[in-house]
Length: 120
Length: 112
Image 1: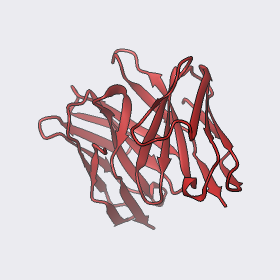
Image 2: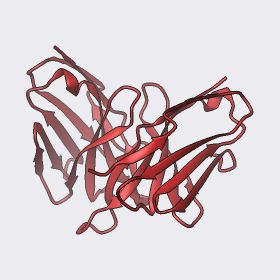
Image 3: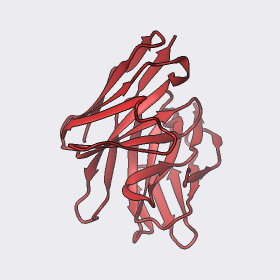
Image 4: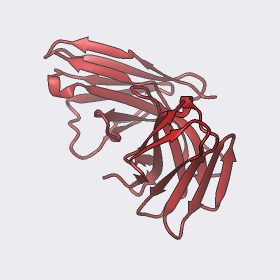
């Protein structure tokens, strides 16, 4: 099956530093990837849609200057948490969309294992 | 805002029993997906059911979809301890067919 690799799995950083998380689709090309944030015991909240070769689309309330997204290739999207603060500590998950044939406009999402960010 | 709402929020059963989880959604969809998440891990896609399908099977999983009631159910038969996880339904966002909104999830505990 399709595999999405997310790296790093966990990271601890000091307040004020920036952290980059990578999301790679290993065996399919993904023009669209998604970034989610998950707080403890809660569901995933969509942060932004990452589109290869164009600017990401952010959900309402998500600071685009805080969470920089780059989708420079068909297999890689990165999320950079800039000037991280303790309130940014969370579990970040990416997903890559593999389009389904015969069902126009939709696809199957494959998720990374997630990255746990702890900001001290 | 969340579209899918799972019910129950938590479920505890003995190994070997069946587990049924329900999901309700609000807007029209062209497909509905179920995912599993082990604690602290990413999501694993379980099954996708299209709006023109009423039932779908995959191993010990059985998913039904009732578009008239805007609801879906996930049945896990002969549950195992390894099935312990949170289960989410996901529906495409009305604002973009490629987006998926997750429900609040059902936390399943299978007791050995």
